[in-house]
Length: 187
Image (cartoon, one colour):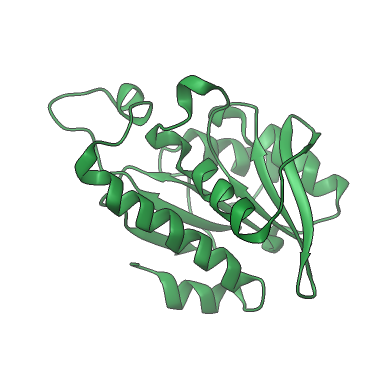
């Protein structure tokens, strides 16, 4: 089984914020693959289906961003999923809005959701798709910025990034993550 995990915060007030871009990718995949997220376990909302020969779970942790690992690791344990069988999708302040960066390992880079996952997994070695949201301008504080919505100029790039991230996840169903990484980095 492969688990595709989109990070974000639950609740209407966070729906269209920069920090919830991982949730947006999961929503896109749920539509494309016809996998409704109707099940709940370990404070996460998920759906499971077979895509070709691969069993796939789409997962939104509902623990709030900074505690994402509290949902993901129990889910992995319950379904007996190894570290290399997950991909985590999240926002990145250090990438231009709409740019993608795929990696198989790395530090948290200041992202609290990733810090939580690393802490609970006990390793930095797991697949990830980072989606650029840029850094705040005009002296805006980072917490306020990541919980703000995309402006009109950014929306086209962000929609493109969400679709490309979903494309990368779909490619991962039949290819190694390294192959996917080589094809999608910088998209």
